Image (cartoon, rainbow, N blue to C red; front, side, top):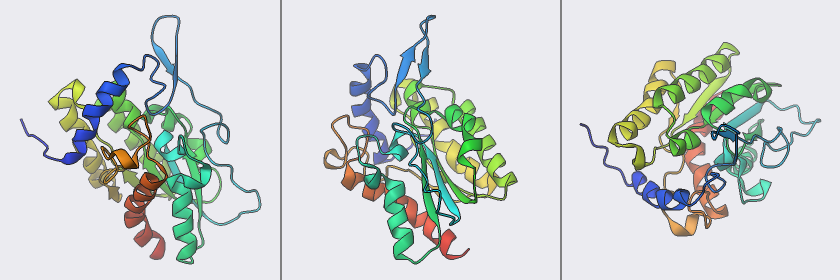
Length: 244
């Protein structure tokens, strides 16, 4: 069996200790409620409310760069200005680029949740969409094949509207076995090759597992950590916006 040697996996050893104590997953990438049959249902705020996307000014007619993600994108525990999409807006403005960054992150979202609200996320003059989903799929041990299918559908539907997609990778925790880790790790570059989209190899590169860059839950970046996440995304996104 192929072994993946990367320090990024060390984060999830700490995550396991933390999530084991979270019966409702409320300290994971979002929140859920218990159904009558014992299963769990993600809680998705309405877009523009709670931990959902940042409201878009009605008079801003610039073409949009939409960030479709979970609480890592929404900026759980941070002010809206500290979430990485807002930091990327600052980088866009500093480079004199005519784009509006739209935060379409919702706490608790799995890839299925992102797919279910895709039509809303793609409203308006969307030119680029950054897809940053999968963290909650991994924490819940959802099938890697299901994650890949959902992400593929999101990419296909965006490309059908002539929207450029950037895919941000995530990693799986080790408690579901090495096979799951490998499947999860491989699906992002496979999708990037299949659909010809740029890849941010790991959204939390340089942040995961570093105490000073994460909030007390050990998962969500601090304001400083969010700046590193923004840098990770900007490295891939900037050449695309500059060349358009």
